[in-house]
Amino acid sequence: MSASPVVHRPNCENPEACIARGAGHCRRCHMLAAVKANWQDPAFREKQAAATKANWQDPAFRERNAAATKANWQDPAFREKQAAAVKANWQDPAFREAQARKWAKKAVQLAGLPLLRRNVDRAKALLDEGECMDVAIAALRQERAA
Image 1 (tube, one colour):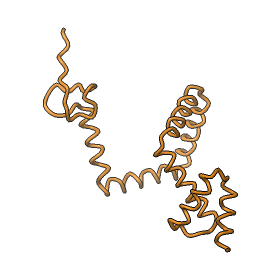
Image 2 (tube, rainbow, N blue to C red; image 1 turned 60 degrees about the vertical axis):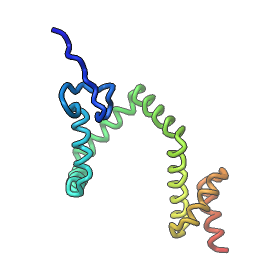
Image 3 (spheres, one colour; image 1 turned 90 degrees about the vertical axis):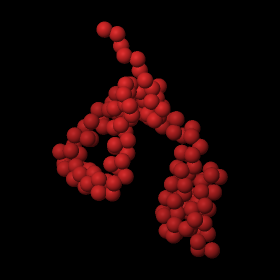
Image 4 (cartoon, helix red, strand yellow; image 1 turned 30 degrees about the vertical axis):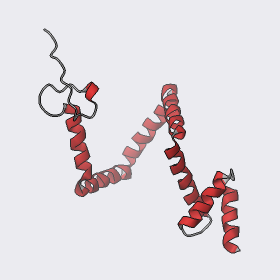
């Protein structure tokens, strides 16, 4: 029995891996499109959010999740994979910028200042200079008092 030739579809998510033999998308790409369309629907998102919230309210679910997470982190291969993923994220300048803004916002909140752009920019500048979070918060508070 010979294998059928693979016809790559230009509209598929990953044409090199596409196994579509007829018109349209391969099954994987069709499912990706359907899932993406579902998440665009506010009613679907609301239903999913409610289900997720209900799951996390269940002590048995939380216990199972905690046990699975703990077991995963005990596995050296999992830890290595996670460390590599984190390292790869930090190599991305866009990720680093987003994290810097998050930390700056946190510093502004901890300093008791309103989340205005000028406050966040000032906090980011302090953190970019190499100041630790505590020093940046103290400087923001001092500038507010002045």
